[in-house]
Length: 70
Image (cartoon, rainbow, N blue to C red; front, top):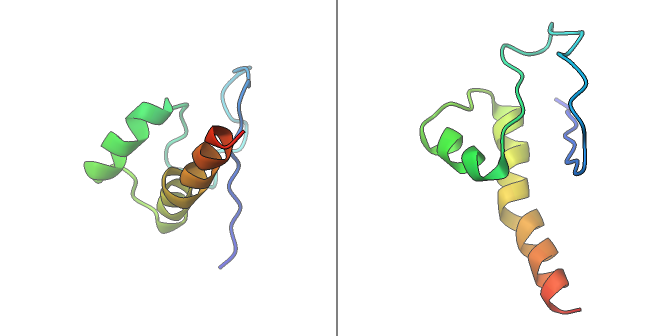
């Protein structure tokens, strides 16, 4: 299985997704709410959970460490 995930900042909502064939639910969620969604079992699919776990774990840790070293 191959999947891609994207982390974006400074984006602007322009409308609902046009192709909903690949998702049962699509929404914008603040980063602070993501941990609660995961903890309550509301992230149901493996690829999404993998991408979110990576972002909340190693990616964010190295990003934050890099920022503090500057």
